[in-house]
Image (cartoon, rainbow over all chains, first blue to last red; front, side):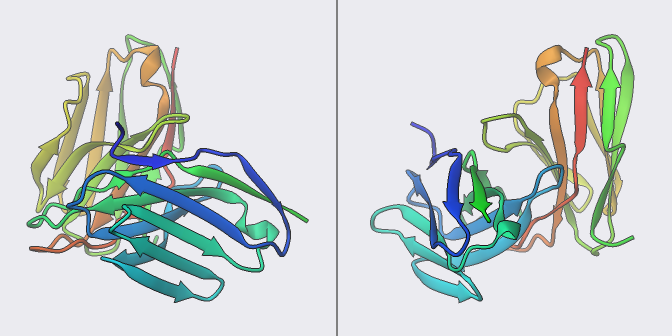
Length: 113
Length: 115
């Protein structure tokens, strides 16, 4: 079983729709959860960062973490064509000065104008 | 220059060649990373340097040789690669600290093709 599972897509939705992206994980030691966005021919850029369970909102983006179900989500409201990218979930366990992220495979998202 | 830069952006090499990838971070961070990104696979951590000391070598073949001369620069020396080593190689940096996790900032990557 992979440590982090993420549906690779591709996922296509019309502009203005709500997008839901998800990851599941198996390692209960994970406490830090991140979503990265990667445009074509670019490196990943951090989009959202959450610690432990709960929700975090930033503009049109909401990150949710459910540690009891080992499930994290990223919601995008009022989706725009500029949101078309690959979205990577990543997570890590507390470590002493040696951060190691475990990534999902990424979900390729296309917003159709 | 800002953030994390990588050169070259594209590299084509034969299996007998020797080449090097370069990464530079302008963020004042103390940790640097090499990742490999292949199609339909998760990002694979290759090496971690913390305060210029290698703290992680994720079972990477010896044909990949990292070098970290200071906390701002990271190199990946390549020799006698195989076609399956073709991938996007990403460099990242972060401010490592005890007991926590800080954001990793990625460079744009080097697209490597091994013929």
